[in-house]
Length: 164
View (cartoon, rainbow, N blue to C red):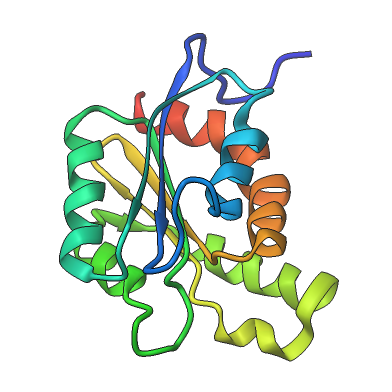
């Protein structure tokens, strides 16, 4: 059985954790993203942790876009606290926002996990050129949900569509 929208090469992925407190040893969310990608045809070309700073976040993402990543997955900084600026850093970069990603993420969070607190999540996705960018909350539960239910089943299709 063939899957619609598959590609016949490795998908280049960058992983960015947004945090003022995590390092590569304590970053469970970023590590979970990497572990979840292992069974797919992916190569993790870059993994980094950046501070909760809009300039730093957008600079890191733009660097990975310029480096030719097919996909970038960020964790952290998607809430409503004053320091949560991942969304503000990403939206100006987007050529196209993929509204359904955030909508479905919040719906799944509501029904499967955290109830009405899901409305505090501002998870988003969008494209910059031929790169798809997903912004997930930093908790491991949110990363697992977003990866397993939304990103992993469609990553090949996203990359295929952006490279037609």
